[in-house]
Length: 262
Image (cartoon, rainbow, N blue to C red; front, side):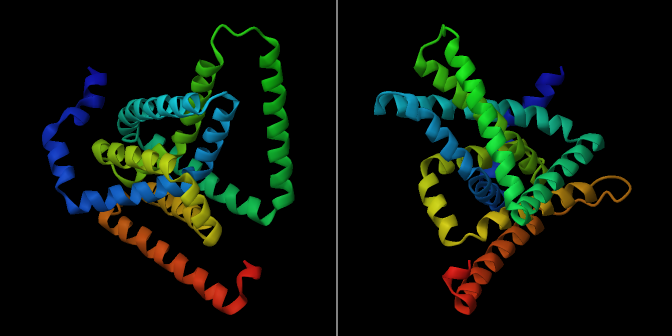
């Protein structure tokens, strides 16, 4: 059956043993964790904000815990489907175009902040109107479970980009699963630290989208007629090189222009 074929690698203990003892695979996993944290930190803030409607701290923590387990389950399901679909060149092409779009949109919004702010405001107004519409209807579920479902829905939307980017980096579902799950845990647990780090080094955010562009190019090169598969080790080296250059560039800018110009 197709479903068994899709999820069989997750239950291959030999594959798990190889991944857990491979330095190269752990380099890729670390790369995926860094990408997950940098790309999803805003999502963590949104998810935390959703819990503020709950009356007690215990309920807030419980809703995030349920949301975390739901995010893990969704990742498991989507990675299994994705590892099957990513074998089709049409899916790779669509994924590459979508990742290029994300990269282009980010840098376009940076160059046109007013237009980006207007779009964001319109989006917030639509969400607020939808939220008010929901308030008028009678709810069968309690406030706690409505919040949990809302967190799960946001997790699903937010994780599509991360899963697509991760599958473009590695075709081993176990590597993608470990990287994604550790990344989710780190992102949820140290969201405030990552936010402060990105405030100190604001170049980290555009760097993340530069990496998205590189991943899109990696997918594109794998398509016919080129069929060039960039080695995972080479990609990991590129990621850490870009990260190192970003940090060096940050301190160079401070030294030359001062913090006020950042």
